[in-house]
Image 1 (cartoon, rainbow, N blue to C red):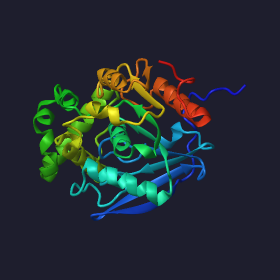
Image 2: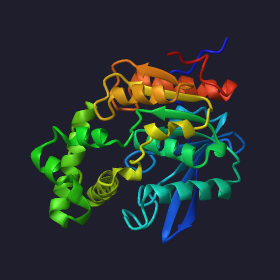
Image 3: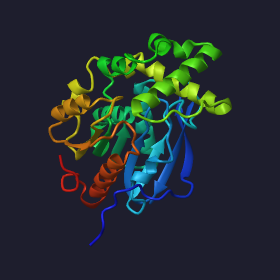
Image 4: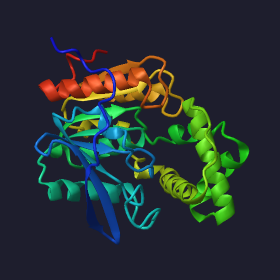
Length: 304
């Protein structure tokens, strides 16, 4: 009898990497892991603006999956770094269509966490015929209450000025980015690290500039919002994974999304916050992906 995997898969050697010009001066870096002939899985990173983490491929069995991780516009190693021009959700959705065609993938499993889950839902609405399944972790719904709720109890300067980061001068911009990172760590229940400097700080500022650029526009996902549009999400295998202690994307949002997607399976990671590496979240993510690889369903391996 095979023992189920409940921890991350081992880190793999360097990924297959290529650059994808998508127009308007933007070039995406795309990483691929696992089997070239495996089950195609599109992984959408969070933020917006965070870029792909090497951690993301380790939820997947590399013997079964072809894991595709694009850095979104301006994020990670995509260029121009930190660019805000021609950088909207509509642009990102067009890039996903371009990427899928470039790879010759008819349909793919779409996996996203936090902002990546919001983009996954938007992609499923934009190109439903291309989605074979959805794995949505710690879903961010981009509602007014989701955005305002994050900043409501933030330290005064961040709460007052987060919208101004894209236009901020260098010194106040760095201060805002550091305050944002510290607040995010606090809300995630993570220990604060030492303040970065040099290129690491520059990358941090770029990340939060993109995030501010998106959040102050409601990520271009309001009116109607994602919940109001869920009737258009394809009825493919869908699992929602959410930490019961998530303070960044609150559990209420997962309940609302599950009600709007009655064919979905909702799985609670007990005591987990927003951190994807919490042991319970890792267990549920790996179990869900292994179940999809084996049976193209989440029903028998993860339960509500």
